[in-house]
Image 1 (cartoon, helix red, strand yellow):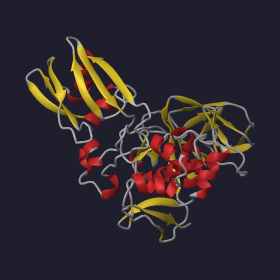
Image 2: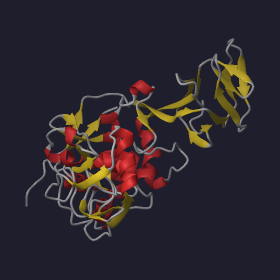
Image 3: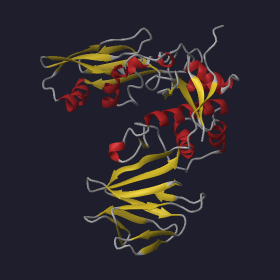
Image 4: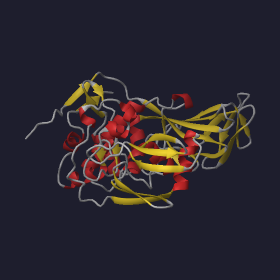
Length: 370
């Protein structure tokens, strides 16, 4: 039996990071409510007290913000003095500092600043079912925490670290916290995956269909793949139903590509381009008019709909007179932790350390001290 280099180490001490989440990246109007009597200063510095539980409409003005009838400055910060209380934005609860500001597009942006451990409490119930085995939830907590650290600052130009949707990790505030999620996050507090002394750029997905992906097959721009991200054969999820088909008319494919490439002409040819030995398609070859081009599979999935083309693991395509049928298996990009495989492993009694070691061979389970 080959042993994995998978041990618990300590990285240099640092305080728990505060992460900023774009919970409303831009809106014309939103609703705001406080669970307590919260003060707001108006544009002239005079203090006003928002009525607890009362919904206030918030919108941008030429000078700043309007909260109900209050003319406020272009940026307002709200935070409950009691950790049990929250700010409600569009009826969702947030317990960190909530910053409401007028953005450069004349709309309203809302950012929450929250400790990374509390952030995970709002991520896990959206990324894995709270009813799943605790060891699977622990593995998910470690990978989600690792993802947060390695992607922090990605949306700095927009005024926050991460989005609250699938571009980063789905985050819903405190509304869906559960005892199992809290237990998983607290049991793995500060733990991240590392490789060669650095935090690993770790990922996760729903279902790999029998083999996880080499990161360079899914994102060619990622460069050479570190050992933990080269993909592994996964016997644990192989029996979970994962086959799917998706059909698109030629006109839909053409419109999706032309919106991004500004290429004129009709779709004359469409075929699978490069494909790795595990069945992950790297790109497609298209001929539009007289121009032949390559389109990365991950781009095409986003353009046509990742809920339709569920995975880059596409076995074949079937062309008809009017369109293309995609035949594949798996769900998600396929890189890193397979969530269904993690569930099966946990149901068979494997610990979260072994689950992580299986999906990220050669990695180390590291602790960021607070």
